[in-house]
Length: 181
Ligand SMILES: [Zn+2]
Image (cartoon, rainbow, N blue to C red; front, side):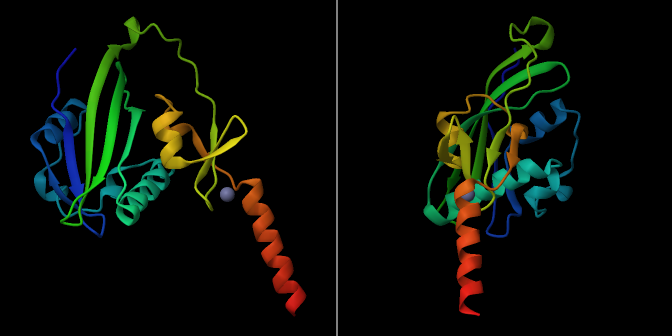
């Protein structure tokens, strides 16, 4: 297994990349991406993510970290065509009002040696209104669900679906507005 130093990058209040460490460039190169500094620094971090679902999840996490000065820490998968890669992400807030991301590799296994069957993890539903995730009939805040429940289930498996409670609230609000008229 290759050893990587933790990949670190930080964004400013407008979500633009302000700093990345050396490991960022080596990790990118290892994933067949050879960016140059000028096309990375100053760019919105979301420009480098193609999956809109992942952008939705990360935007929410960044907002929580910024507004509540919380740390989000969770395991995630970052597989390559040859490797099953288990990583841990920490998202933190700094006094300079930057949000820092630290991605650390826990282990990397060639697919051919992976003991795990290639099963598709179950789809989890995330409410786009209250940001809670449905897990075995429980509604957990996303940040808590990621750190305690998901283990290494990919963020790709999260789908947006409004929860019953929010549907009910919206309906009641609609009825109230209707009643006033
Ligand atoms: Zn909801």
